[in-house]
Image (cartoon, rainbow, N blue to C red; front, side):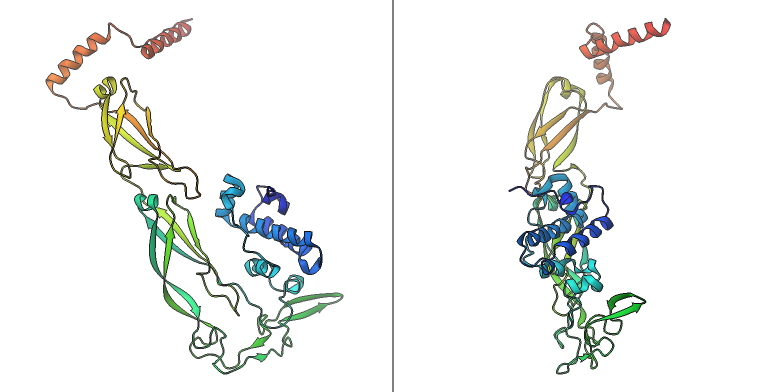
Amino acid sequence: MSKRCYYEVLGVARTANERDISKAYRKLAVKYHPDSNQGDESAGMQFKMCAEAYEVLSDSEKRRRYDQYGHAGVDGAGAGFSSAEDIFAAFGDIFGGGGIFGDLFGGGRGGRRGRRGNDVRVDMSLTLEEAATGVTRTIRMPRNSACNACSGTGGRPGSQPQRCTHCGGRGQIVQSAGILSVQTTCPSCRGAGSRIVDPCPDCRGQGVVQSEVSLDIDIPAGIDDGMRVRIRGQGEPGLNGAQPGDCYCFVSVKPHRMFHRDGSNLVLQLPITYTQAALGTELDVPTLEGPERLTILRGTQSGEVFKLSGRGLKDPQGGRTGDLLVQTFIETPKKMSAEQEKLLRQLAEMEHTEVLPQRKKFLDRLKDYFTVAEE
């Protein structure tokens, strides 16, 4: 069965901005949440489909791939959502954690509600050769990790947090103004429902400590400048047992002294002489795998392109491998010997006796142009 368009699922236009997409998802998530539609399997499927659409359209890189390749460009997105809790763990931050959304997704049921850890960013610079073949790099970066002394609880080992007296352990407080009542996160315990009265001395009650970690990052073959690689679960740790964030590795590819990249294709500008273009020749041209023989046909024009199939870059999304496009240009010498000049002048005299087809067409058009101008 073919998937529905993600824009259609959320009911937004393809030009919708991030705010419109988040707003549409919040509205649909409330409408189709299983807690509000118990026993309705279709609502549960719709809820999961909305979350899948939001995961793609809220991520600029996934959205770009989806706009370009459709569902094939983002296969697997949302496949890990097996329940409403999984979806809220991934996107709970857009609901604010309080009010009707907090109650609907478990934020107002008392106890310390977990919060997904923050994502982290690292930058990596590659040569074109490394980008072409793929590479595994080990990086070191500062990152918060769960405190070993308190196992991430923030309290001194052996101690217990105390129930928040401000909210009665609910994590939420109700503020009334006339006939209106608004439920908000408790400012005293910040929604935890409890307070640490005896903080861990190692992390000072934060539950995390900063340390330097080593991380192996696998860069796929064919990655392009500006792309990013997502390493799931390698971001900041989540609070109260929630999922950790992700690590995003942003890749930059250094310019190459020989090749210019055009998507999965490589472009090589090859200078040839007038005689090579006129008479034809065979030349060794560079590729990323080593030199390869290229036949320059007799009568090659400046700017003509020859293709070496499969000598480009792999498509990181699984498409066909690109080609090496060799663009020739005729290099005119600025200096020449007396003998060379003599031979060229003899050739120039001979050219007057035979007008080549393209030059003849140009002269005819030029003649017509001047004739019209005189009239």
